[in-house]
Amino acid sequence: MAKLVLVPTPIGNLEDITIRGLNILKACDMLFAEDTRTTGNLLSHFEINKKAIPFHLNNEHKVLHSAIKLISSVNLAVLVSDAGTPGISDPGFLLVRECIKNGIAVETLPGPTAFVPALVNSGLPCDKFFFEGFLPHKKGRETRLKFIAQSEATVVLYESPHRLEKLLLEIEKHCGAERQVSVSRELTKLFEETFRGTVAEVHKHFASKTVKGEIVVVVAGKD
Image (cartoon, rainbow, N blue to C red; front, side, top):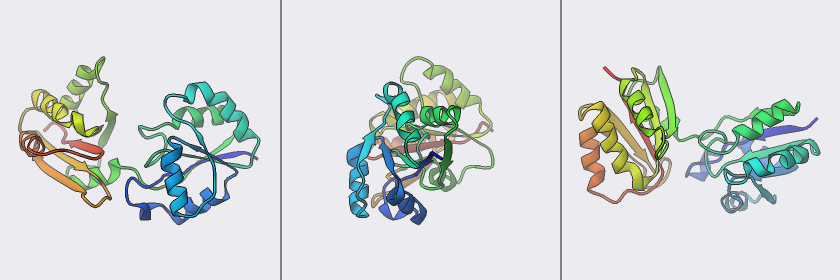
């Protein structure tokens, strides 16, 4: 019986991949990857000889049905994203949904994802939280910011380094300068950093430096 397994891959430190994840990658009959070059580097590091098939945001709708046919023709297919868990702000949802519709078994391994360590490390309440992911760049952005301002639960966002300052200014505008936030970047990597404080303090800190790496912003709920 055909099965699709979603395998989380390291968000930085290659030692974070699980033994089970490596065994599945070695055993799979077919491998779909968001970026075949990035996945190729991972496979090469662990001496796994597999050829990856591209499956990313720009082609997932176009190749979805052909991917289902390919998965149906083998026993074990795997999907990986660039880093982290497929489907979390990465391709994966469409393929999982289509597999379920077609009676293909789906399994997701536990493993790396950026927002969990950033949330726990923030020191903000994580008993109840809302994962926002990336905000829309234009349409709907203001609506989401207003939602964040009124949320009583902690909110987790992803952002690119060159848009971080804009986001912090928007959070300050909607939530007030005293709202507590935590910004984590380069998680699991050599220059990992988490800076916590009021949104005004955090903005001042990052405005004075060149920001690099993937960003996770954690915003305290409305008091």
